[in-house]
Amino acid sequence: MGTKDSLLGLVVIFAWGLNFVILAIGLEDVPPLFLGAIRFLLVAAIGSLFVRMPKMPIRWWVLYALPIGFLQFAFLFVSMVNGMPSGLASLVLQAQALFTMLIAIILLKEQIKLYQVVAITSAVCGLGLIAMEAEGADVGGMSLIGFVLTLFAALSWAFGNISARTISNLGYKADLSLVVWSSWIPPIPFLIMSFMVEGKDVMIRSIMNIGWPAIGAIAYVVLIATIVGYSVWGYLISRHPASQVAPLTLGVPVVGLTASTLLFDEVLAPYQWVGVVLVLCGLLFNAFGAKLIESIKNVKRCAVE
Image (tube, rainbow, N blue to C red; front, side, top):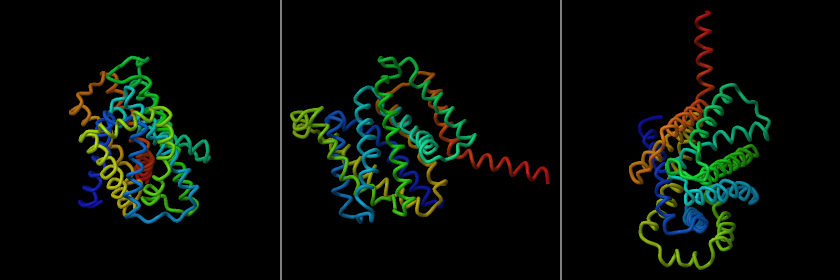
């Protein structure tokens, strides 16, 4: 990538990495399920003014939006008000890459490679260290329920990725237009669940008493993290190989962990930092393992010749 596109890649990394700490600010004033409804309503209402409707049956909007929109963010937002620190959330959520690979192997019958086994093993060991001894009590500022809910968020994202892959295989475009227009779907279950779980009075009170920090957080999540972030991401994907662009997401948890440490003084136990490194190593090996193995084979081939 050239200098311009590399800088745009940094924009995405920081936009999505800071998204987690800013979400934590919004959740101080707005209950999680109601915040999810507001987020997707605003994304749909604003984005639909500028992005054309995707040319595909609406049923694919639903099959894409329910896991990657409603389920992912319902689990994530609820986890963050139940003891999941924003920095760790940004890391654990990246387990979606490994869940996507496992689901593809099971449902799509894709072949698993040795480097993928190594990547999964490293990441699972890392996640185990992060969660170690968090049996309902806070460890490194994290609760067990928050950790488990974030894993469910990552699993939901993975099912959304499989939906996007299926949509692409059918000849449709799983691009920004799908992200924007499918955002009309999640507010329906979010509002129903918010009404049933959080209650009408809490929903009304959160709107009446919302402060400027929460308003700014919602504006950031909608305009910067979603509309700008996915627009730039789509631009990069359209101009460069996916294998070159996709690894940029590895920078998201680095930004998220750094920002949460600086802004919220979130401190991890030493063994949790080891877990962070193992998860990142797993993600790196999953992203670059095939190229590494191919490079080793080329070196051996040249040595023989």
